[in-house]
Length: 535
Image 1 (cartoon, rainbow, N blue to C red):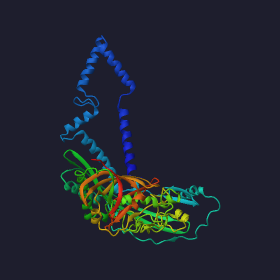
Image 2: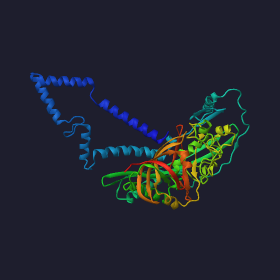
Image 3: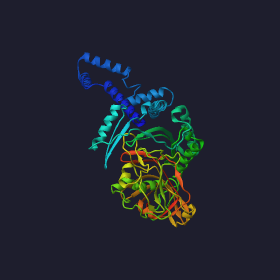
């Protein structure tokens, strides 16, 4: 069960308790009707007894407050506000409600960080393959019978005699691409909270305009055991760490928000001084940058993609089209492009599971194949796709270690790992200087891609206008619209300044999410449509 699920359950229970209290505490329809009849009788009766009783009720009501009224309060909320005022603490009603909610979330977080037992996800998935058909079932009950039942369900796609079972299983050795010094199981909340406090203080100290800061980190420790009908047995322990800071700043009545995050396959040692200071500093800088920025001018123009996070464009608009299942089904524009030139000769694109401690790295994939370095495009020529075992069998090639899944509840699919473009021959400053008028895109947010054709739209969060070969006016909130394969063809300068973006990227496909990483050098695209504003 995930932390989100726990919070939803806790919120639902709290809502039920509040509704139950209101139902039990309020007047029933019968009592309310009787009260109104008595009020009418007292108001219009000429009987002396009724008049005396009415006056007595009014006197008692004046001296004894209603259930929710205190000192003249007309509602429960007003009564609560009066109680808060009497404490002398100076709390507003909103502060009290937020504090109560925060206390509830803190208790939930304490339970989460202290034990984590209720948040453990443990189970077995069974996949059966027959030709192009795949049967998949899973169970969270780790008994022989439950696993056999899941296997029986998955095997419903198969017919005819079964394969002979392996006589022995071979435990395959795996590399260690993310060695952990301080395992998460040995780290309690008392060592995590100071990191949050420090991030909070650094962000507020970064600029006096910062009004609100949200900080946090996430950690995980996954264990994957894969056994197949060929007698292979593979095991991988997969740590994960993520840290993020989001800021809201105010200047002259304007508010802007932005943030920064970092992630990697490491233990508690991930949170060193350099990363903590970097993520806080960058979050503040990205937020305050927006006060000086405006949308870019609209039109078709050259676009320079900055090194690092611009790799999201490569991942989304091009990388998905190179996943083998989309090509096997004829969906991708690259389905008939194997061995053909699809980009200029300076471009080489790699999907790599071997990078040490990167978020998308894997020792073995979820089919038991070693995570390897796969060259997809070599000097402009499409060499191969990203394969799982099913697509590899179809194309009669070896799997590339890209068979990945979100958890035991889902079947493996061809998925990216760390996808990036290798550096080229050009100096980044020379690339910028080559543009008479265009856009320099630095960071991105919110994109949409049509995987088949590769059409995309992406939102540039921060960047600059390029005028006469120089970065001039800061820009923000600018759309770029294009087609991934065409952008690849129009990439005519590739920088020598490659770097990974170490953010907490997550890739979604067929309802599954897996951690990935990405990167690229500075590149120039000769023309992309910029959806800015016209002067």
